[in-house]
Image 1 (tube, rainbow, N blue to C red):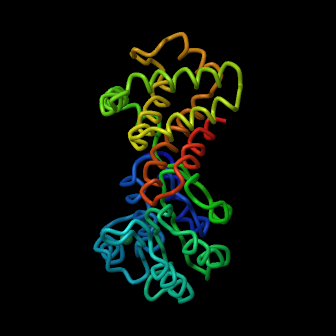
Image 2 (tube, rainbow, N blue to C red):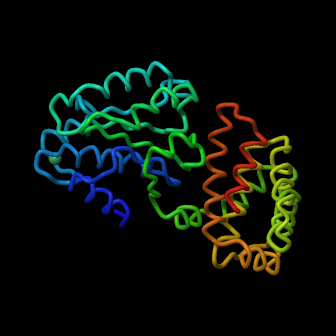
Amino acid sequence: MTTTASLILDTARRGELHHAVILHGPSPSLLRDLSIRIAKTLNCLEGTTGDDCASCQRIDRRTHPDVHVLEVGGDKKLISIEQVRELVGEATLRPYEGRNKVFIIDPADALSIPGANSMLKTLEEPARDTHFILLTRSPDLLLPTIKSRAQQIHVGDTARALTGPRESMRIRQVALLDDGEELAGHILDTLHRYATRGESAALLALAAIVSDHDDVKDAIALLGAMFCDIAALDPRESLDPKKLAEIREHIPRERLLAAADASLGAIRWLAVNADVRLVVEQVVAALV
Ligand SMILES: [Zn+2]
């Protein structure tokens, strides 16, 4: 378990966890696992962060009446407003048998705008012993009004998660596109222009290059893969090493990784037919 995860669980065990937290990170399964561990910790009969007591077992089997997981149903792309209304109603009730009611929203970026709005008040003034755990690849995908009501916690080592399959990922992305090499060259040049001259126009140009591409999802994936490559400490890449070094000198590594994270989120966001240019502009804005 990562240090972050142990810290969160320990905070929950002491009863000091913020009533609304956003867990964000590159691995959806890691986020889900941690949210379940938090639910167990908040309700464990033995006071542990998860064992085989009756409560923990019921949470594992998803039959605990006080632990609710809101997820996207069937072939839908969004969590429905009805699901949110049910949550809001349920959240006004006292726990049935546990110490705490726990609502896990997976992923929180699948909340529609009306859905998100209808739970704002509940998020802001929850009943006692009620916790909300919102999962997302990137908090940038959530409405600011939701973000401002919750504590944001990054889970998992982005660098490690993304640099593992890094090389194959970029090379695969290049290969997926007819003009992959050319696009990669454009992205690198434009990013370099931004890094060395600080022209914010270059960032908008970068967003335009990617969002105007015929195959926008693969183009965004290539963009994300390149952010990872550039952030990596030893890119054994065919990318121009001088340009790479100059970009890294001007754009902090955390910014590059944040933008890589945002790229992953953007691809998901496009599934709900969001405005492409806007989504890609948000990706490059993570560099600033
Ligand atoms: Zn237990």
